[in-house]
Structure formats: structure tokens, C-alpha cells
Image (cartoon, rainbow, N blue to C red; front, side, top):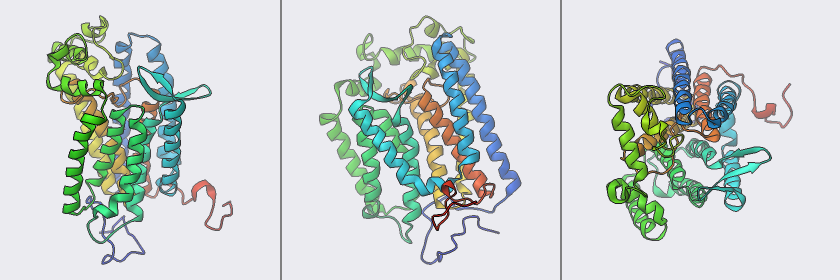
Length: 403
């Protein structure tokens, strides 16, 4: 039995692994299948998503614009999976996070406003949403933190305070846009990574109580009225049928009318008659379910569950703590986004504007999701030593270029 996570300079008596997914035996041939499964599922989801978007957008310019976004996203997928080794992310994790925070500050100062939110940044002809990039940056910085601060005991609240401050900074910058949904997703991504770390029970209790207190404070002093209405509509959608509850009710009608087999491609009445709001973004899952029914939704759930399983399998066999934690973070990006989007469409979660991976319209989101899976594949390839042993930007430890 050989351990692929050999930390050569650390004694087992002094250092304990924070990741509970203990690395197992390196089995190369079966593991090559994992990346292939991820690639297959990704392209299946992209084909299903683009077909569904064509129906949701009714063949308008949104579909063709997303095709252009997809081309860029696939390039990012290839670069992250086959060009950039994970150790480069480890080296520059804090720099990447700092750059994203600077972009978020620029958004808060001079970002483009649409539908009452200031979330987009325009640099020349390029328009993008930095808060989507923050999801990847948060996952990287959490992985970096646990890679450099390994302890032989469970982490205490004091140990995690620096990480909490880092995540809190990103949360505040995104929440100020206002974008509570994406800010919450970033926090949940970090929470998913923390779930694989041993934390002191007392500290965990303090965090839970603090979060409950903050939720109460946020309800009375932080949340806007429209954000409170989203929560109230979750409990009672009929409260304002023609106003704030309209989106959820139309979504229920679309999903229910799909029944088992669905109405068929381009045959969804709620979609084609434009009763369903935000059908190309927030409620695109309702479009899919109306046209493909319970059977189509079950297949979609199965694909995402398999994708998450493959991601955790890669995390289990990561080359080091950073790779394992980063793989968990990339998997969490897909998992959290999928669960929140489908839950809000099904009336199980407030409508917070979280995109459905590979389905919802949005260039930055598509690039971010493809990059996340590319990084997962890069981690798998690195665990099999398929990357050349190069330094970042071909610069050696002596500061001279490597030829």
C-alpha cells in the first residue's frame, strides 16, 4: 500500500490530516475513468443545457450569445485541466483572491447596474461578473489556508479566525452589490470544505449560535424589503399572487404540467407563452421539467449526483492537502449551485438568483463552472504525475528562468 499523499518532511506524530477523506492506494488505470466520466457528464449537461436554453430563449440572440460564451468556457476548461498544474493555484491562491476582491471593489464603485443590482464590470468590450469568479477564489484560499496551517489537534475558533476574516471580506463585498445569493454560495462553499476538517466541538457550537444571532440581526437591520418578501413567499407563495409570489407560482404550474414524460421540446406552454419569468436564468429548470417531465428531471439529478461523486473521489486521492481541499471546493461549487437553484424553483428555498450549472444563461457563470471541472481534472492528472515538474511561469527557486 503506497500513500499518494506522502508529506515527506512531516512526522505523523506531529501533523494530522485535516481532510477526513483519507487518501487511499494509488490505482492508476481505474482512476483514469474518473476524468472521462466527468468529461462525458459535462458535455451531456452542456448539450442538454444549450438545447433547453434555445427553448427558453425561443431561439433569440441569447442562445447565440451563450454559444460564444461556451467557446470561451471550453478553452478555460482545457487550460485548467491540461495546462495549469494545481501547484500553481497553491502558489498564487492569495494573489488570485486579492485580485478578485479588487474587482469586487471596482464593481461596488463603478459597476454596471441592471434590475436594481450592481454586479457587472465592463473592461473594454468585455462585460463579466466578478462575484462568480469569487466562488473559485474562495475555494482556492480555503485550500491554501489548510495546506499551510496544519495542526495535530482539532481546529479551534481562534485558529479559524484569519480564514473567517478572509471569507467575510468576500461576503461583504458581494452582499453590498446587493447579491445575497452569490455571497451565500461563497460561504457555503467554504462550509463544505470545512466539513472535511476536524473542528473543536465548542468552537463549532459558538459558530452556530453566532450565525443564528446574525440571521436575526440581518432580518431586522440588513435585509431589504424585497429580500424579506422572498423569504415570506417561500412560506406562503399565495400571499401576493400577482406580485412577489408570481414567479414561484408560475414555476409550480410549469413543473406540475410536465407530469412524467413532459410536453416535449418547444411544447411547454408556460415557457412559449412567456408566463414563466426569468426562464433563461433563475427558472430554467422549470423550463426543462415542463418539457421533459419527472423522467427528465430524474436523469438530470442523476448526472449531477454522479458528477459530485466523481469530484469527491478525486478529492480522496488528491496528491496533497491543498489538492484534496481544492477538489472538495470545486465539487462544492457545482453541488451548492445545483441544489440552491433547483430548490428555489421547487419552492424549497428563497429565490436568490443562483444559476443552474451549464443551463442558466450567463457567460461568467459558464466559464466558472467549466473551469471548476477543468481544475478537478487537473487535480486528478496531477495525482497521476501527468504534469511536467515545472515552476510557475518557468521561474526556479533561484529567481532565474528555467530553460
